[in-house]
Image (cartoon, rainbow, N blue to C red):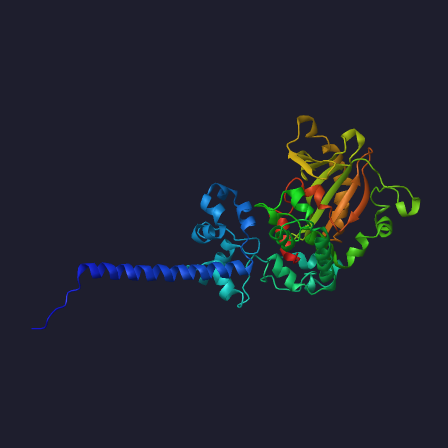
Amino acid sequence: MPVQHVVPTHYMSTLFKTLEWRLKRRLGYQEAIIRAEIEQSGYFHSEWYLANYPELLSEPSAVKDPLGYYLASGIQQGHNPGPGFHTQWYLEEYDDVRNASMNPLLHYLRFGREEDRRPTPFLDGVQSMLHNQGSANNHRVIYKTRRSADLSHLGRIKRLDHIEGVQIWREFSHTFRTQQGNLAQQEAEYLHNRGFLPNRKRLYKLPDTRVDAYISDLQASLLAQTNGPMHSLLENTELQWQLYNQRIPMVANPTVTKQALPTGAVLKVILIMDPAGAGLVPLAVVATKKATTATVGMALSMQLSPNSGRTRSVARFNASGIVVGPRKPVPWEKYRYKAIWQQANASIVMPIQKESLYSFIQIDIDISTPTPKLIRLSATPTVEDFQVHGPLMQNQTAIDFMREFGI
């Protein structure tokens, strides 16, 4: 009769613990690989993630480790890891990914990109809009790249292949180094990699959880290039005067009359193309006043609602250039510029919108007189006037615009 060998109970316990340890080690190793792969892709933005899902700020685990939270819970909740990948749309668009119950972002990085699948919905309508800006087939005027390319800041820099973009990047790096001052190396790298000059840290209190929603100094320089051949018109006062003088109210042409530009209150409006509808829409409106002796060296900026003209917030710059605010408007400030904005919108902004000549533009309007008058159009925004009220490019239209044009 064969002898039966019975494994002692304490050995069985040790065996199970060893197997459990090896399994956890294996799973932890795989998790580390996944984390590294996603981090290197540039598709996960910690600051953007927390800013777009503010409810996570009350979750200690999410604040401590945003990527870990996204992998553990965010995907199941349909969260997007950053502006370059739409989780829910990807699952709805590709049945095989949804049926495989696979991490959609991981699938895209490992397989979808090679299969030329799209990480976001196609933004149609832009092609027909850009007939004035050169070939519609090359409307990504900054980067010649596929929509599926690395959307991180460093990824964008690596893809620069237009001489204008390369030159802008070199100028930014040179200016940054000359202004770096006594910044610690870690802070300097943080700001440089995001395209911010050092004074932005003081102005916007960077870094914070919403930094990726601000327009950086580098992006502000690149925005001008999205207008293609129309860029030259936007930087030439004489051409603007010839084009708009008989059609919309304008201030006297300073190159002809030798008069100085108005120094009173100015209305500033940023218009961007809505890629889905291929039309220009107001992104932001501010009313600004320069510092005077009456304001004790402080400049004023009021953010208005593009729809109603009602004042949303008020900010001031002190004599050192540091922003004070923003704060909510007091009752007598709420409707201060409502009527003049509605008048300027009807007589100046809307006619320019109908031209369909540009993809990005800033309009400055003199509102110190009863009749609003156009001062200038520009392709390069004065971002401080807008961003002291908060991140300028955080709504979906703005995110789609910057992705469509490779900014």
